[in-house]
Image (cartoon, rainbow, N blue to C red):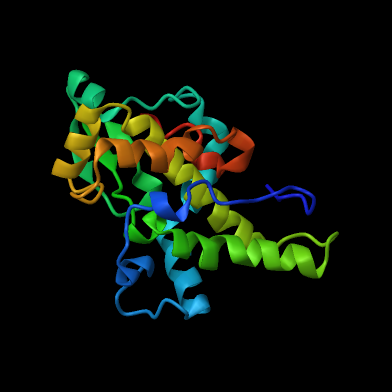
Length: 205
């Protein structure tokens, strides 16, 4: 899904509402410099890739309703154990009494990261050629990042969900309820066309 050159793209949270302040956390890896744009793009693309799920997207409706993602506390009600996965294509996949959840990469909680590595490539390309299509790789990772965080707007809907998320190390321990609500609010209102297709169903959660 391409972003129209005329479509406005913007960040969904302000700098004051970011959840990480340490510049070291603004890179996907401590071994990669924040300003090494090619290396950062390669890392975050691999981190968020749902390519395998997208190949099955047309069949996902058979096992899941759109946006059918239960909050973390209700996963317990359903008798599911939450297991950590670092694979984006396993995020929210469940099997009987287990559900796999990918922790939020710290860089996605950083305003500087979104501004520099996700938004800037889209904006820069649009200003160079107003009628030119934006780079597919930049569009793909933008939609995957937005879709991934939108799933967390469903997973963490109550203070009890945030407590569980911190216990499971899905989010940083220093995040409080009010701060979380301000950060995630913009992602909660994203339309399906603004996110990667594989993140729409939540992979059967």
